[in-house]
Image (cartoon, rainbow, N blue to C red):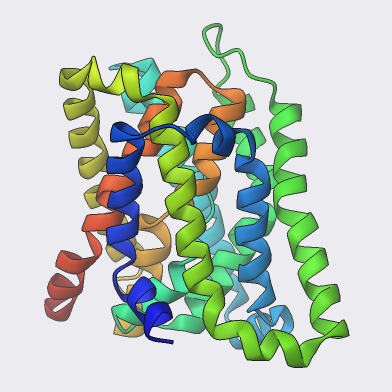
Length: 301
């Protein structure tokens, strides 16, 4: 149990360790890159295994709020950020669109708990955005498609359906068959997922090691751009939740600012240019480091 609590309490150490090990010792990166999709499916399986979908949906009673948040998070905000960036740097714009189009992070409810927000609302946002992502992500890339973007949105749709719905269905079936075993193991699922994220970060970083180390100037400005994006998403989440109570406001901010970049890494590795994959990997830096200052700032909002 101490090990589980340590992993959950210091999850950021494992994210940063994945980055450092991937750059310094990428021996196993190729193998893990080949199983990124199954790894993400296992992660989602454990998330759905901990989730009572009916209970979550009943707790999120304001369906109009949920619909509004989903439209803002999954369509409006990604497009609003993409459009001005597209005139500055198209590769950066596409990478940011992919990242912001992702559903809320699978660890969103846990992060919301850390900063004392509404866990039920955060869970509802995570589950619903994950379920609709197979439909909204291909739609966004169809809307912005241009000559330099050679991706197949139908293949992205199929991959997302497989990634999301197979773990979802399988988890609910297993919960019905062996509920006692699942309840006993629930407290370990988050720690397992953090270790899976560590492996995914290690694999992705290791696969692009040479390009990253040989282009440090480009990497630095991309990391800077991602920090600006992350801060902007925190601010937009605050504006969206401004008229809500503190707990709801925190849940909204966390759900918008902390995206499922594990899913973004998998999609980038399969469907996009390596430069987009690197951007998704680098998004781990703000993801892993901004929650602590946010926890301090939110006390005054």
